[in-house]
Every structure is written in C-alpha cells, then in structure tokens.
Length: 115
Image 1 (cartoon, rainbow, N blue to C red):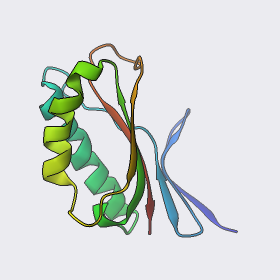
Image 2: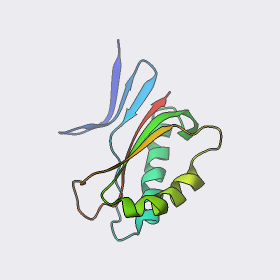
Image 3: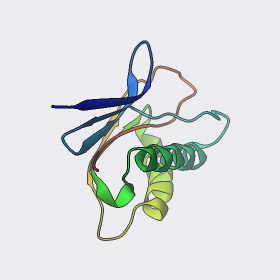
Image 4: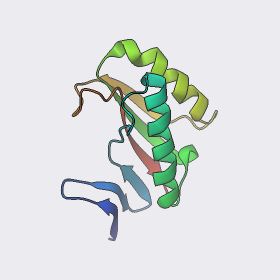
C-alpha cells in the first residue's frame, strides 16, 4: 500500500494520504493577535488549501477535532465554523478543551477527509 506524505518536517507531516483517506496535522493560526473568530477563519482557510493540495475539499471532511484552550471561545469559534462548513456536508466533530503548544493560539483543528 502506498502512503503519500506532504510538507514533511522533522516532527510531522502536514498531510498523510493512505487508501483514499487524507489525514491533516493539527493546524494553528499564523496571526495570534486575532481574536478566536479570526484565528479560526485563518485555520479553516489553511485547511481549504491543504485539502485542495491533496485533491479534496471541505465537503469531503469525515471528522474534525477542534482544540480550544478555553471553552469560553466556543461560541466565537462556531461563528467562523458555521460560515465555513457546507450545509449537508458537516463532518463528525469533537471540540476539546486542551492546552496548546503556544499560549497565544486560541484554536487548533485536525481533520480527516476522503480524497
């Protein structure tokens, strides 16, 4: 079986594709000065680009895990999420409160999608 890896780094690959399934690493924002909605919009735009690189799009996301360091940001994150997600193509999703690698990150999102 073939395993494809894209944007391979020392610690992780940003995209791994196996048997028609795309696994994205946790994506975080570049601009940590933005509020939760802005950071989420930025991360979702990154996910769009990565899925396109892998030959897919957000309508094919099977599951998403969203990590928030503070659940008080849940509503603000959902503002961006609900504008972005395609009606009728919503993935299975979990939102987890977790400490992130950089305290300035307000959100990290990890997805699995069909190719």
